[in-house]
Length: 135
Length: 421
Image (tube, rainbow over all chains, first blue to last red; front, side, top):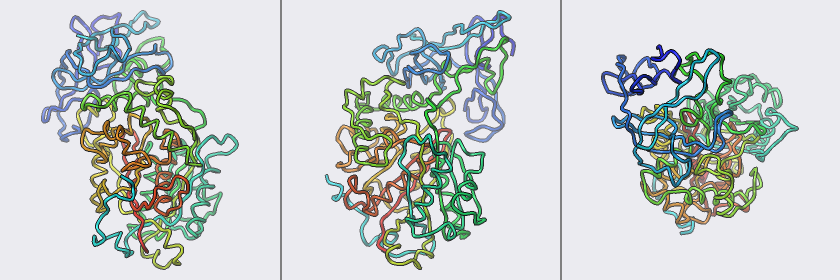
C-alpha cells in the first residue's frame, strides 16, 4: 500500500496513516475472526473469504509487561501490552505516553491508538509506528 | 496434608495399578540425565551420548536392543543428531527420527518412540533430548534490524524494520510475563509476590537436586529485588540457558513381561502420552496462548490415564518463567479455577505440600537446555516413582505428571505410574 504522506511509511502494513490513523484487519466474512496478516483459510472456521475492516481505536489493557532487557536498539524500559479494542480485537502493541512503572500501568485501563515516528531512512522517509496511550 | 495422605485411585480400578502388564502398554525401562549446566569442553553429541549410554545401562539394555531412536534438539535440528549419537554409541541401522518442536522437543522425541511401540513397529526404543546453549542470552525476537537505507515493507506484516520492541515484546521473559499478567487481570490474589514465591520455591527445591544447574536458596526479597527482565519477571524468576541431555529407554508391555523381575520392578508405566497444538483462540493471533492447549492436553491425559489431578504425587511442569508456573497450576487443574494465587500462598506446591510441583528445582533452577527438558522431567518423575530420588524423594510417590510447552505452540504431557509388576 502507499503511505498517505509520501514522506511517511507505516511500520507495518496493517497500520493506516492519514488524518485518522487506524489499524485494518482481514476479517472472515463467515465467523468474523480477524487477522493482521494474510490467511489461506480462516484459522477458526476454515472459510476462505475475507474482507478488510477498520479496527476501532479505543481499547482496554488486558495484559502488560515492562521490558527492561530489550532487543538491541530499542529504548528500555518500555511497556509491552495486549489490548482489546472496543470491537473485541486483540492487538499486541506498546503502551506509550505512560510511565513504565507498575504503579502507573493498570490492568483494565482505557487506551486509545496513537502514532509516532521511530526513524527516518536515507531518502527522508519517516517510519511511523502505532501504540496505545491512556485515553 | 502430607503427600502420603493423597487420595489415590481405588485399588479396584482396572488398569495400571492393578498390577497387570497389558501387551500394548508402554513403559520406561531406563532413564538418565546429565547434570544441567555449562560444558564448554564437550559438545552436544558428547552430552547426548553420555545420557543415552547411562539410560541404556539403567534399563539393563544396549543399543543393539533398540528398534528405534528419536533425538530431540532445537539448535541441532538440521545436523542429524540422532545419527551422530549412533556413531558414538552404536550404528545398528535402526530408524532415526530427528525431532524439533520448540520447548516441547524432548517430549516429542519421547512420544515418537512411544508411538513407534504403540504402532507395533518397535518393542524397545531410545528417546534422547539434548541442547548446548552456552551463554546465548535472551531468547526471543531477532531485534530491530539495522535500519535500511530505504524503508521497504517486507514479510507477512509488511514491516519496514524489526518489530520486536515497537509492537510489544517478542522476548521470552516478556511474553510469559504478559501471560501471567493476563491471569492477574482475570483473577484476584495474583500479583508480583505470588509470582516471586514460585521462584522462591523452585530455587529452594533445587538445593536438594545434585543434577540441578543451580542449587542456591534465595530469599523472597532477593528474588523481588533482583534485576527486572520483564516485569513482573526478575532475573531470579527466569530460567537460565544451559547445556545438558536426558534419555529414556521405552519398552512395550509385551516385551517387559519377558524381562527379569529385578528389571520389571523398576519399570514405570506411561499411562498417558499426549501432544497438542494450539486451537484457534481470538487472542492467540497476536500473542501465544499457552493456556488452551495445556488445558486440552491435561484433560486428555487425565482421561487416558484414568487419574485426576488429586491423584498426582508430584508434578514437573514448564516453569520457564515464574509467571508461567503459576498459570499452569490452573491449566493442569492442580488448583480451583482462578485459584493459582491461593494455591502458591497456601504452600500446596512446595515439596511438603499437597501437590509438590517442580521438586527438581524446575526450569528456573534445575535449568532448561531446551531439547533435554521434556525428557529430563520424565527422568525426574520416574526416579521418584522408583523411590530412588535420595534427598529429594517424595515419599511413597505412585503417580506423577510431566508437562512441557513450546511456543508456537506445542504442549506435551506424560503421566507416569508406579506399577507392581
